[in-house]
Length: 409
Image (tube, rainbow, N blue to C red; front, top):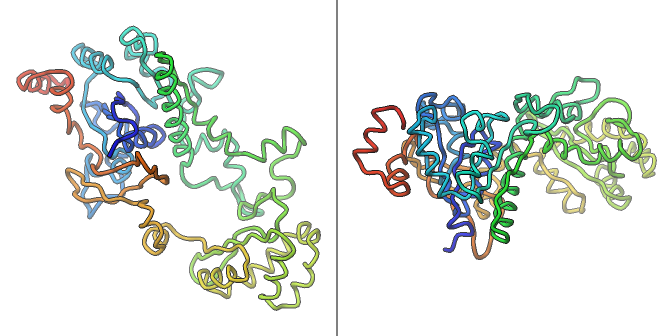
């Protein structure tokens, strides 16, 4: 199979998910991603290396499930850039690369002597991609940050809560996902520009800016109409605040923490739902304007009704009416119960050098001619030192052994 990004080489310092998630996309489509790590501070930059989840209790820097998930099919080398020889080897690697990517705090690569001006001196058409919390420009550029801080500063934390309760946040760093997706797109755009013009450039991203875009209609409503978030009363993250649909939210079902999603878009769907519920209280909400103005009371009635049903059985029944409904699936239900995920290839199995066969996240897209492929797990620490240094930089076995003895690799 022809790979869409065959021939593209990335000198990669990314870690965690905000950066590593970006270059995972590119490696899946055939780019040669050479992930560079520090042999002295092993696992300190990318804490996912030694973090749960673990397969069958195997622990250590080569067994972190998150690290394996975000670094499939990449080559992994260790390189001590505090040493002159390490800097020389990095310089040689940059000379034969198309992209240098990192998601350190602003200015880290520059302190090492590899800021954009130095990179351009090494290779004029290099693409340098930086991705940090607040970017390299502006009043916040000197600050370091982490996922929950990004959520709070961007306004997203405030939008997630239940009525009369404090904002809860999103519970997971979705900003890392968004930052990674934006970074992957930005790299591709820079590569396209280089293909068309021969010019490299510096691509500067900020995860907080990426998070800000997820506020969507709330920002538009405020900037145009002066409407605060939430429009009135307490935040209710179980209900959509912006569409003229009611009921439109998440409702409790029978069992432990089971829920169903309902989206009633018009009077016809409400009539079908009301007929199925077959209770006198539904007549109070026959008028669409009334439903929209009294959503708290409506949600209370809907919850009292749905809590008597199994989420999947109720969803199946409502879909036949037809009324838009879906069970709120837990991750394990989505992976192991719903059959279409296997057909779409969302969780391929890769072979990891230490863990053996492991399932990882695939990509939610397929190309008919140049599809992605994942076969190899993330690199163990320094796993490809010999391959990269000999095949790409022309070092012999004795030179590589000396580098290891001197702590350069």
